[in-house]
Image (cartoon, rainbow, N blue to C red):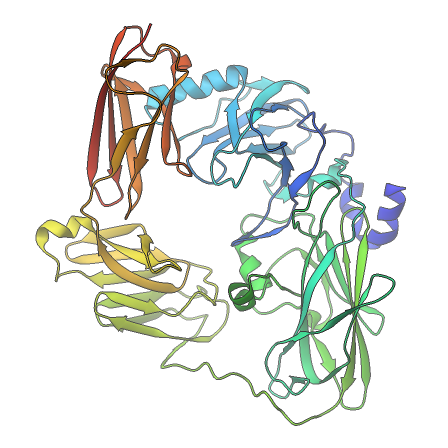
Length: 560
C-alpha cells in the first residue's frame, strides 16, 4: 500500500527511487524510528541534511553500521556535529552519524590515541584506506548530545558519490506516518509595479478557511498583475509532535502545473540559499518560515524541479484564476490549498512601503561605505537583491541595518580603535548586540589600531573591552580530598564577555583530555583514560578567553 500511494502521488518524480538501492541500508538504531527532524527541513541558514532520530530522551544507545564500509573521516568538535563519524560504502554512497556520545571499539581507541598525540580534544582525522573497516551490524558508536545539539538524538545522513546529502527515506528506510502536513499561513506577493492584492502593493497574508474534507480555501482574493505565493507548512510523523519539513510542494494554475519543490537531494554549496527561498523578513518578524513558491534572482536551488515563468502568476482584468497548492509528505499524505483569484483593478489602499535610506546597495557590485570610525566592505553578491540599508555610526557603535535582510557572503567591518589605551588594544573586540543588548563575541583581528571582523548577519556592532579573565571551579571534587570512587573529574569554566577561546589541562604535568560541554560550561576528564598511576595528583587547568585573558586553576586530589 505504501509503494502504491507513493507511485500515485509522486508520478514523474519517482525517478530518484528507481535509481536508489532499497534494501542496502539497515536502520542504524535498534529502537523505533521516530523523528525529531526530517530531511530538507528548514533550519537557520541551511536545509537539514539528514534525519534526526529520537533516542528516548537519553544518551548511550548503540549505533550499528547499516552496511559494510570503511571509516573515511572522523571529526570531533565542540560545536556543529560534535562527535561525528563518516563511513564510505562499496556502492558509492556514504553515511554520516553526528552528535555522538562516544565511538565504539577500535574507532574509539583510534580517536583517543590521536587526541592524546595531538594534545587536543578537537581533531579531524582521515584514516588510511581500509584501516577502520566495518561490517553490517557492527557496533560503531553510541548516541549522544555533543556539538550544537538541542537534545539527545542521532543525526543520520546518506550522501551520494558527490557528497550531496540525499533523503534517507528514498533508500527504503521507513518512518510510520499517517498524518497530513499542517499549514500555518499563505502569503501573496505583488511582483511588479502595477500588481496588487486586495488593494495592497505589499505582501499580504491570506485568510485560510478549513473545508470539511480537510483542505483549505482562502477567502476570495481580488488581484491584478504579476504575483507570487508562499506557504508556511510543516509535517509530523506518528509518535512525535515535532514540526518537521515536508517532502514535496506542487502548485497549479487553472489545472496546469506551475512550480514544484522536491526535497530529495541538494548540495552543501547551495544550502545557504535557503535564505533566498524563504521570506527572510517574515521569518525574522513572525518566526514562521514562508517558502516562496516562485524563483527570484540569485536563487539557484536544485530542489525546485519544475517552474513555469519562474512560478509567477499573471492576473488579468476580468478573468478568474484558480491557484492551488498541494503539500505532501513522503508517505503520500496530502493537504490542498485553493486560492481563488479575481482579476480586478481597485483603488490602492496600501501603497508599497517606502524603505528608502541614504545608502542604496547594488547586489552585483562591490561596495565600500565609511561611517564615523567604521568602514564597511560589501562584496558583490553578498546580498540577493538591490536594497536600501540603514547604516549609522554613533561613537564606538555601528548600527548596521537590522537582521531582516539575509546576507549570503561575509561582509567586512573595520573600526578605528585609536582612542583606546595601548594596554587595552589587545582586549578590544567587535561584538554584535543580542536581543538583550549584550555584546557577544565576533572573531576580531587587530592590525595596529584597526579592528576587523566579518559578519553574515546585520545588526548593531560595538567595540568592547574584555579585561576580565575566565572563572574556573571544581564540580565533583574538593581540593585535598580523596576521590577514589569518581569516574570523572569535572570543572566548570565560564567567561561573561568574549567567551572561552581555549583550554588545557594536566595531571602531574601530563596532558589529560578534557571534553568541553559549552552548553553546561563544563570540562570533563574520564579516569578510564588511565593517565594517572599515583595516589597524590596535582591538577592544573589553564583557560584563555577570546580576548586573550587567562586563568589558571590548581588542585590536589588523592586516588587509589
